[in-house]
Figure 1 (cartoon, rainbow, N blue to C red):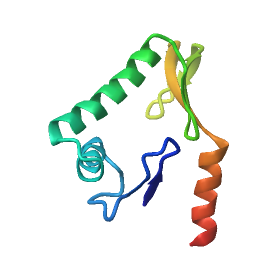
Figure 2: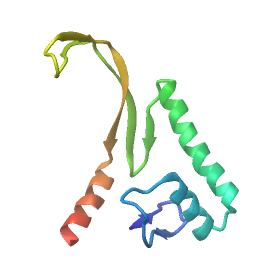
Figure 3: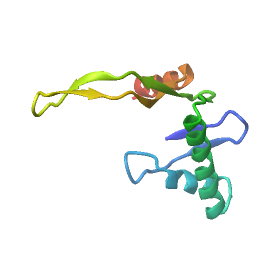
Figure 4: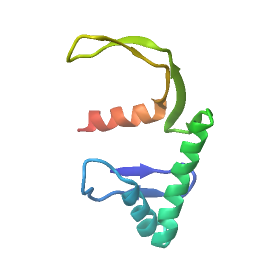
Length: 117
């Protein structure tokens, strides 16, 4: 997997992942290995990045990451639901959910990966 960066920091490569998903710990290791931050700084930077995203969403703010996508909070209205086991009708309360919309650039990159495979 290759992570391209548009702000001049070069190209990052992930040689092999231990799991099917990229984790926060693996992101911190990439900062350590490929940028030269120490392990504590790398972990703190990743944690701070995600904390900022979470706090913005909690505050009701959209998070827009250029060339990646947008995270938004959406309020879902209350609606009737049904218990699948008993068939009993139950109310589902209104709630806030996070939605993600991938940018067209990210979608194009993903489609390019599929076409090349």
